[in-house]
Length: 339
Image 1: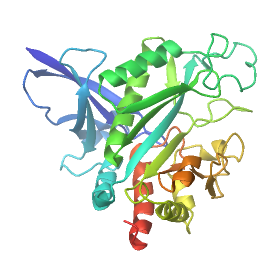
Image 2: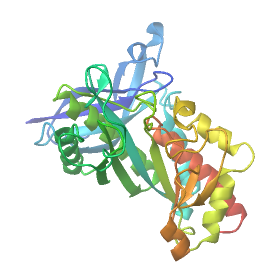
Image 3: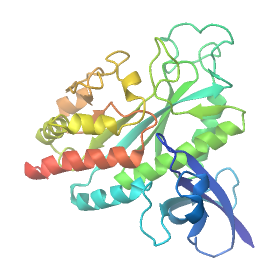
Image 4: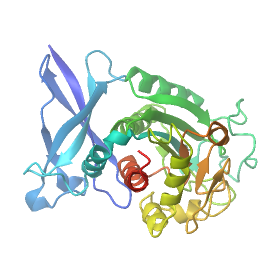
């Protein structure tokens, strides 16, 4: 007896990496081995030395093939078994381990947009649909497009055992969101990458593509983000550490460091309009969706909880955003003795 293992990895395409995958047939009972691929075809190697290594780091049931088949998320290594330059997970592993005692957890809200051909799903062939307003969490065939894909994607993720916590329609036709978490930094990032792969693979069956473009439709339309919710044990127990974390994110060169690594095209999305703060200005506030970082109203009432960094783009690398937030906030909390 055999089973199919779909090896998934993140390539070296710039400025936004792509997901790649291929299938390995394994004998029943055989553990997942390391594998290899041609890095010259994925922007990860030169042709004269093109071998790269796939090291399995997370696996789950394959909800599309079913049976004993699995999805296998991998880190990319060089042939000397060191992390490849494109391997952003390795850097997160180090930072997450350093601050593990603070018990950081994340929830990431992944927005995305369906396209049919060259236009967002639901956009007429000529012209534009009615202005945004009724599409967010809407219902009805005149306002909602792609629900059958969204529902199937959700079912696929749940069958795979991924930590999804919800879905909703977003503010533009064909635009949706799913949420992953709360989970640890590595877990939320691994689950999000596999959920993205399942999104593309599920939409493929409907002849539709899904994009994480930060501004999929120009003009008076919201962009697509990946709002990132974060807390540590101290933040979940008190309000002062929440303020410390917010202040740390706005300190010195931290705002620019973060937005420069929060996904390509961030200037087109963080304009100060459409529930965003300007990309080059940092702010935080209670219940303020026009701030860089929002403190939910119930957090202020309860005097404990979490914060929401509203700046990350839909196309952000979750390994990068979680690493930066943990490093910035946990370092500040440690210095303040709030751990």
